[in-house]
Image (cartoon, rainbow, N blue to C red; front, side):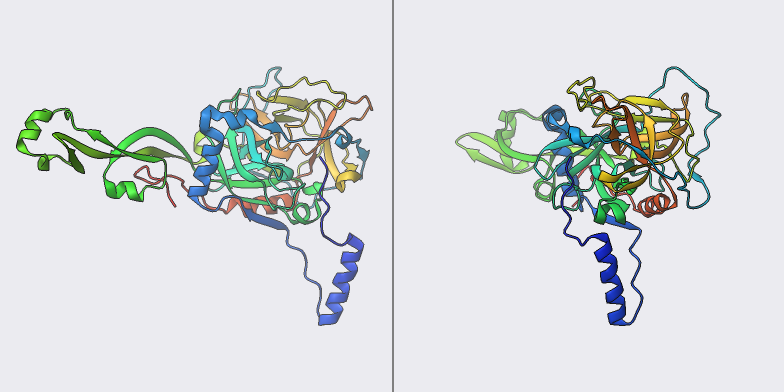
Length: 424
C-alpha cells in the first residue's frame, strides 16, 4: 500500500498559515473538527444496486475480491513510544458479560465479517469488520483505510458492504450496504493512522422471496427487477377452459388481453418481490464498545487474513475467519511511515485482509460477546525475518468515543418497503 500524496501544506507550514490568517482577520484560528462524515450510498435504489453487484451470480464478485493490498515494504517495525495515551475516564457501552474464563478454543462470534468494496482502480477488495452496539442496531466498526480512499482521490470507497459471518463465499445472514461513514478528521485529512478507525451506518437487510404478478400500474411504479411478456390464454386454474372463455367472449378475462386470429393473449407483469429483514444487530447481534482502557488487558483479535507474508509464504486463504489471543505489549509504539505516535501492538501472525477486524476485550466465549477496544490497522515484522509477527491498532480514547457517538446517531434506512417494493 502506498499512501496518496495529499494536496496539503506540511504541518508546520499549515500552522504558520493559520496564525497569519488569524492575524489578518483579527480573530483566533478555529479548531479542526474532531470527525469527518461522508455518505457512501445516498438512496435505497443505489444501495440495492450495490447489494446486487456483490450477490449476483451466486456471489461471484465476492469470490473474485482480493484482500486489501499491503506491499512487503509496508510491513514496518514498531518503535516504543511513551505509553501515556488515556485522555479521560474509561468507558464501556453494551451489556456487561459474565466473568470471562480462559479457554483453549474460541467460539467465533456471528458479529464479525468481511467488508467488501471497489477501490479507485476498480479492483474488488475486502477487509474485516464487526457489528458494534448502537442506538439503531446498524453500525459496523472497521479500519478507516477500509472505508476511506487512502490511495486515490475519492473521499470514500465504492459499493461498500458488510457481510457478517462470511464463510467460504457464503453470506448466511445477508448483506448490509453502507449508508454513511464517520472517522477522525485527522485520518481523513492528514492520513494520520493514530486514528485509523471508522464507524459505518448500514441500511437494513433484505431478502428476495421470488416473483409475483402485478397489474400494469404497480409494474410501472416498481423500482426493482421486473419483466413483462405476452402469453396465449390456455386455461386459468379454477376457472373455465379456454374454449368456454372464448365462447363467452374475452371481455370477461381479467387484465390486459388481445387477440390474434382465433387465439387470445394477455400481458403479464412480473416483479421480483423482496422483504425487509431488519437491522444488522437484529440479525447477528452486536459487540460492545470500550475506550480509555488499560493497555495490556487480554484481547482476541479477529479477522480474515489472506495476504502472503513478505517472504512470499501464503498460509491464509481469506475465506474463513481467524483470530489471535494474548496481552498487548505494555507500551504504545510509533510508526513513522504512517504518522503514528501511539499504537497498541499484539503478537500475531495474521496478514493483510485481517485489517479492520475487531480487538475484543472481556470476551464471553459462551455468549460470544465482548467489547471492541481496537481494530487491526498495520502489520509488523519485529525480528526482520520477512514474516508478519505483530499487528497494531489505534488506541481507543475519548476522541474515538466522540467519533463513535457521532455515528451512533445516524438512523437506519430501509431498502425495501412494506409491499416488497424497492424504495427510491
